[in-house]
Image (tube, rainbow, N blue to C red; front, side, top):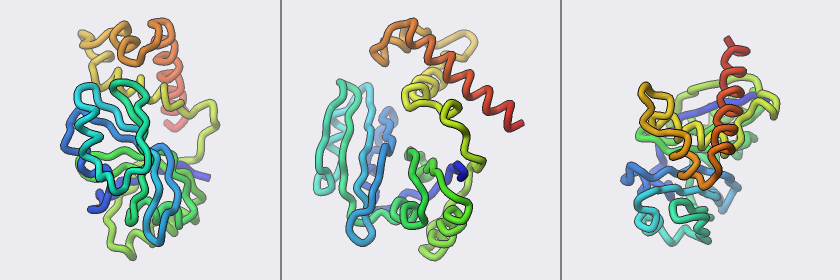
Amino acid sequence: MIEARLKIRMPETCAVAAVRAFNRAKVKLLDAAPYDSEGVKSLLQIESDACLEEVLSALNYDTVEDISKVSESKAKAALAVHQCIPARSILEAGCFIKSARHTEEGVEWDIIARRSSLIKLAKILEEKNYSFEIKRIGELTSEREILTEKEEEILEYALVNGYFDTPKRVGIRSIAKHFGISISTASDMLRRGMKKVLRKYFEEN
């Protein structure tokens, strides 16, 4: 089994395409399953510090099955999309979707698959005229080396908001407040996450 990150252009029918207009909104695919002949059912995590309600209202509510607000800045939405070629292709090739994030150029998919399944996926996307790029590929790491969802969120937030800058633009107290956790917990999760990232880097290099 291998891990890979693919960048695939955003499909026109993507349920979260409208969210790209909100620079401060983050959307992450948590799970997906086949739906109809070409569609998928998706569980999304949507996060926005400033305009969550506005972001949620931008979704096509014909596709929305359920929305649950986790906090004032975060919600989870279950969507049924009748056509999503990239996601459906990944599933049909026998790959597992670990997560997905939208970017300016398209969607970056983190997947787990056999090499044969990844080759099959590439052929399916080529046959359907979908441009894609393999950003990263490597052997599947052990569970202890994979970042937890919360560790990934905290590390990404710290990086984007300048925790690692000199001088720092955000401190550990602000990070803890943002995630609603104690300072000691935030510090511990940052250290654990950084240790996993560094271990993986040095083992691969």
